[in-house]
Image 1 (cartoon, one colour):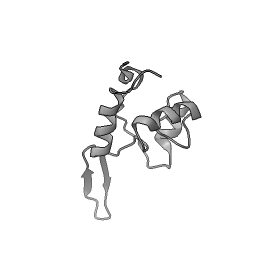
Image 2 (image 1 turned 90 degrees about the vertical axis):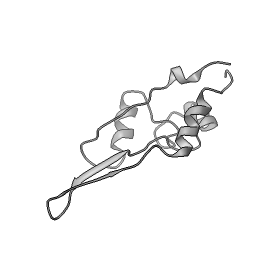
Image 3 (image 1 turned 135 degrees about the horizontal axis):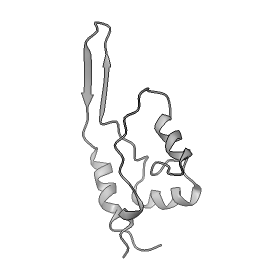
Length: 96
């Protein structure tokens, strides 16, 4: 068994705008697509990613903005169980 986790990096990013696909496009441009990205990941990598993570591994942990009354609004969410499980799955994969 090989520890495939060493082939991946968990990033904590801070996008400045809410532009569609902003994070996904930037990561692809430097040759590192988001796990299980059906739009931007190379086919061979996507096939492997899907064996341990069935959906796009992208999570908005925190969103904040100023509302119409000029008050700061903050929403936070923990990493969902399915993505926690996917991280665990990565360590259990056989060599490919």
